[in-house]
Image (cartoon, rainbow, N blue to C red; front, top):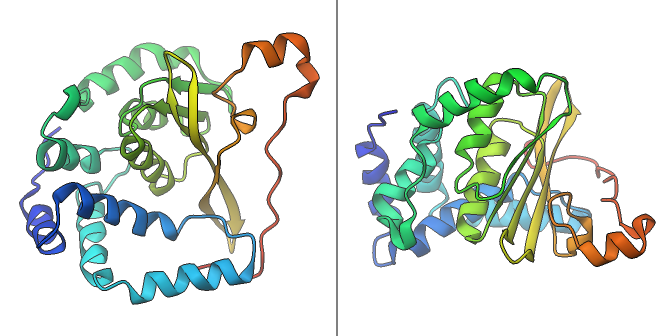
Length: 239
């Protein structure tokens, strides 16, 4: 899939002026995720609102995200990952994401067997989440799970899931050694007739549906913790 990234790059160059490209890109992702994070207290919510409204580049980041949305008018596409690959990582550590026509073809080949709402789709090396997006394009009512060793890839996949109102989990995990770093539960909450997407960050691997500790399960299957059901405080960042 071809994306005309020239306008996006022009905005990004203003954001990254006198900074490294990776630092500026990470700042964009972290800033954008503030709007979707689950806040347990009113003070946390107020602090996030202040960060969003007082960030010195909030207007430019808003322009960046608006242009990103314009490049993806129908959803389930990945201009964010394409921009990262072409202008940030430059293939660092072999980070060339699978082209979207291929992920869509693979989803078409495998998804007919996955039809029940709530069935799970897992990509253990998810990158920016392209396979998950292609799967969601076929059936968005599934649960989507992605893991990656690179924390910025995890955050891109997380943001892509949130922007498409998908539910599941993204985890920063070494899928080979099973080493767990951090995870994000991705959910939606019905607010005013709209399924508002949000995420909860956690560091306890026992709260993950992706990570599995073989000894803990074999010795005591009932000891596995389940993620708590969040209670929404009054108001949100968009109220």
